[in-house]
Image (cartoon, rainbow, N blue to C red; front, side, top):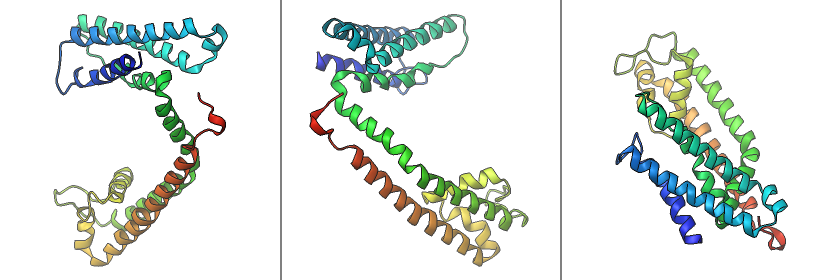
Length: 235
């Protein structure tokens, strides 16, 4: 039963490769039949849980409720998408985002659920570091707008350079990964080599300091929450 459950979960998740827009497109009828088959297997597995579990315990378990809601949403979305497709109306299968719910909430996925819970518990504790990083990014973007916005600089493609605040935020965010370095600073560097100090300071503070701090906080908190529950308790 466990192997069959994992197989159909894997099959359900893999359908994204074959549904429009797809890497290897298959006819809608084929993918819809496979999805309905997977949902029927999940429903049968859930029915089996209900028969071997006390009634009150079954309905108090949020994992079972999540699976039932995911099945209902998937079937509803599939039916609506099929009807719209018959009438030639283009739409999107929004229920794909609920498919990982089956992977997380079945009883066999205890370790995955534990890892997911650790990630969820870690997020509030890294919020402060993330907010500090975003504050630094926004302040550097504002400085860049004031430094370069009024100098009528242009990129190599002839586009305006650092004149829109939101575009500056995005460019500097990419610079944190060094993916656009040193291209992002070349117009300013060509105007004056002293402007390179601004980008050097930005990379030192945000890439080397904040990213290292962010990684350390994420690792330490995730490791703390990943510890085994005392007493061998399980969900």
